[in-house]
Image 1 (cartoon, rainbow, N blue to C red):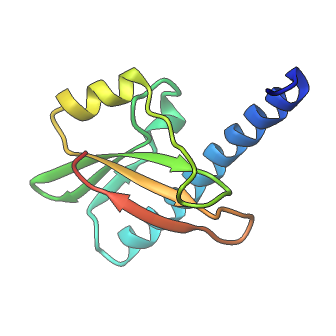
Image 2 (spheres, rainbow, N blue to C red; image 1 turned 90 degrees about the vertical axis):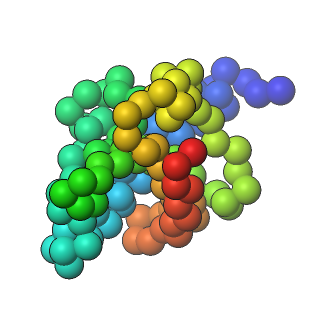
Length: 118
């Protein structure tokens, strides 16, 4: 069980981890762009909060991908959740859908694993 106050704190922590994880990825994609490893990227969820993905990445002139950030301050093994909209887009969307799993997230660092083409 969980008290209402614990639930609220847990939800606030999850929301902050989500924002921090997306900021981490924005920085990561900025470095890739600077190093010419990608052509461009857009932080989609910063423009549309209900988007079923967080970033659109143009890898090459013929390849666009969408990226969903899943972040936690805990271990990689912590459970992540996909919404129906995220699952639907991953299965039916025109671009490949990747999950960037950010974990062990703190103020100065994070670890990253990438699941491509889910």
